[in-house]
Length: 155
Image (tube, rainbow, N blue to C red; front, side, top):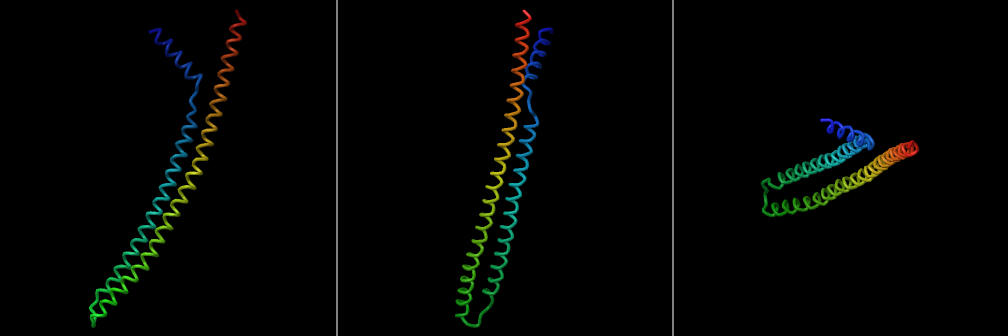
């Protein structure tokens, strides 16, 4: 049992010499969670706008179909009604396609902006963590050197 205690003490001492910076891990998690929240917001906003646009387009199409489906006095009026409907649909399709493209463009721009900002945050977090770890390792190495020198001069 004594050997187990010695190994345990040795492991504790060794782990103490290489401290883990949990703050850096916490900061990285918070940065990731914040990025995820912002990206979700971008996606949900785009979905909302796309749904509203689709619903409006559908409503407009159904309204125009109602007009087209009404009984006409002359056979030629049916052809004119269908032509008017097709022409209106082509115009609406062009407008709505353009609107969908604007939504996609905004999503792309917002996403790139968020990822660039997150990259900067991650870089800053990593630099701070590396600097802190380097400082701690240097201090530990200096302490070990000092202890070794003292032990050597004591002989």
